Length: 74
Image (tube, rainbow, N blue to C red; front, side):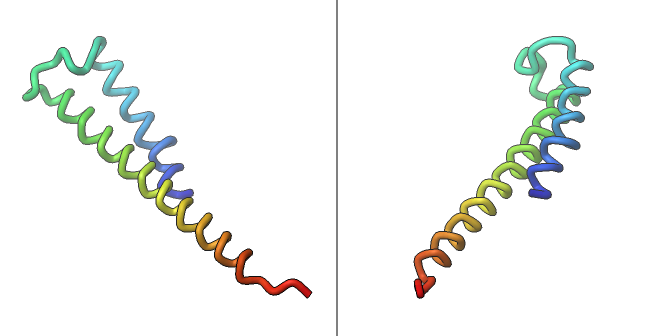
């Protein structure tokens, strides 16, 4: 949950600031442009955070299913 929150509340806001500074499509900037590189780094951090959150959710769901299938009913 923390990784998802950071990706959505911190990184996404920074991405929006970079996009506003660019003022147009990111892919129209030169690959060496510092704003495009900053956007790329932030986007990678966002994807990583959401990926970690997704993996954690899958693990939690798997553990829950395992726990529920291993319970003995009285």
